Image (cartoon, rainbow, N blue to C red):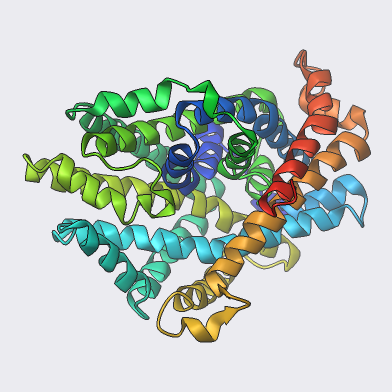
Length: 454
C-alpha cells in the first residue's frame, strides 16, 4: 500500500518549488536579515554564499541520495542504505528533529498570522514602545497565540492530507511565486525611500576588516539552518524524486533560490531601516518589534502605502513560514504513514494533533504560566529551540556526512549522483572530498563554537 501511495513530483518545476519551499522560510526572511545586521552586512553575505556552496549544497546532495535511494520516509531510508543499526539511528533522529521543530515553529508561524490580522485592522500604529508592549502582551497571552498556532497547523494539515502532487506540489506552485511577487513589491518600495542607498551599500559593499571567526562561524551556521539540512525535510522530499531528477543541478538551483530570497529579504528590510535611522543589528526582535515601527516611520508621508506594505510584509512572512511548515509536517506524516501502516490522512491528523499539543505548551511557556513550564532557566519553547537547533541539527548533519562519505559504498553514491551513469558526474570526486572532510569539520566547528568551546 505504501508503495502505491508514494507518488513522485509530477514535474521538474514541482521538484524545485517544493524543495525550495522547504528551504525558504523564517530562516531567510527573519533570521538571515538580523544575522546579517549583527555580523557586518555585505561581508557576512559574501561568506554565507561561499558556505552555501561548500557546505549546504554537498549536505543537501547527501540527503537527496539517501532519500531517493530509500524511496521511503527518512528513518526507513537510512535503515535501507545502512542495513540496520547503528546508522539508522540518524534517520530516526532526523524524524524526531523535524517533529519537534514543527511544534514550536508553528507557534512563531502563528505569530505571523496575528500580525496579518493586526495590520489589516490598523493596530500596527504607535511609537516604538507600543510595538514592544504589543508583542510582549500578545506572545504572553494564554489564548491568542494558541488560536493562531492551531489555525496554521490546520492549514498545513489540509495541504498535507491531499498527498504529494495534489497537496504539497500544488501548494508550492501557488505559494512560492506569490512569495517572490510579494518580496519584489516590498523590495521595490523599500529601495525607493530617501536614504535607502545606505542600506543597499550596507548589504553589497563588504568591509573586509569586519571578518573574524565569529562572522565566519555565524555564516556557516546560517547556511546550515537556512537550507533545512538535517531536519528530515530534504531526505523525505527526495524520496518523491523520479530516477531522472538531476540531484546536483537541483541542489544548486535550490541553493541559489534560497540565497536570492535571503538577500532580497535584506533588501526589503535594511534600506527601510537605514531610511529612518534604525540600527541594523536589532537582533531577533527585528521582525515583530522593530520592523512595524520602521514601516510606519518610513511611509509616514503616505500612510496608506505604509498600511499596505506592512500588511503585505506579514503576509509574505506567513507564506514563508507555511512553506517550511509543510515540509516539516510531511517528515512525520510520511514516517507514521509507513511505519504504523495507516492511511495518509490518519497519519497527517496524528501529526497535527500531537504538534498542536506541543505548540500549546510551548506557547504557554512564554506567558502567564511560563514559570511552571521553565526548566533550568529556560522556557519550554527555548528548550525546544535549543535542543533541536543547537544539538540535533549539527549532530544529524555531521553523522549524515560521515555516513555518506565513509560508510556507504562509493559505487552506490556514484550511481545516485550520476543517475546510474546517464550524467557525467564531473564534480563527483570533489563532492566526496567535501562530504568526507570539509563538511564534517565545518559542522563540528559550528557545534563547538555555539557552546563557546572555540
